[in-house]
Image (cartoon, rainbow, N blue to C red; front, side, top):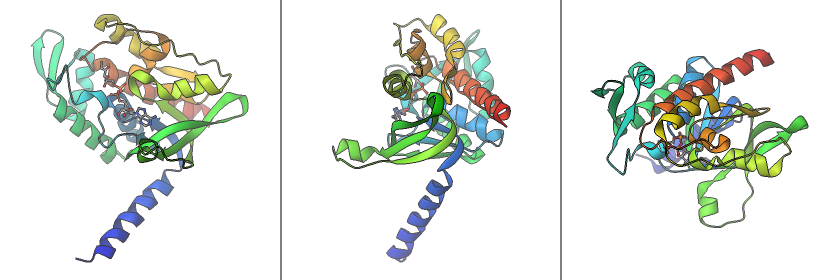
Length: 255
Ligand code: 48F
């Protein structure tokens, strides 16, 4: 084996994919459950999408289930998504299904990537690009290691027709937009746990918050001041699917 050939293979292959991802239809910030479900459904509809994930691992808050008991609960409607992805579930009581968090994250990630949405880990979204009429037109990226090492290094940017904020509880992209534009985005902050209401409202809260920016998953509840819901994950999956459907619709209308 030749180390230089190995190094060239990695570098060329990575850069080819990164270059290919510099102009996309949809750029997703965060590879948690809602971001990866959105990525899966977008790719399934032949939309060019890419996900940027800050951490080494994808899956966000799903690996740990509830207090590190690595099981998740979903309701009937969301079970259909797990069925479609080939993820096993067991009915616990009527309307409550349990799935293994490790199987769910790994299968979801695999289905998302194999459908065609690339995931870049270790890259943080640190800003957005904003053009006329406060339209979000892309993401500003830097290596997560840069902020960890407290280095002053300028970022790179990619263009996207639409951006999805799937960054979870902190709704990081919406917070940046709220701070830096007059686009009228306000992050109200999530409320205390109420699974029933949180699960219902997360789907309603999944929408376009300003031109070019959609919000999905827990970020949607953070933006609109809805409750958190703990280790029930159905709403995350349904929200990711809705974000993809909304994006597909907006892209069609823009043609
Ligand atoms: O937090 P996360 O899993 O968000 P989600 O898809 O799902 C929420 C649930 O896991 C759980 C819950 C269930 O009731 O409440 O918390 O809404 O995944 C968000 C991902 O985004 C990444 C973060 O590392 C995580 O993997 N992320 C956050 N900020 C950035 C980011 C950023 N600025 N750039 C890139 N990735």
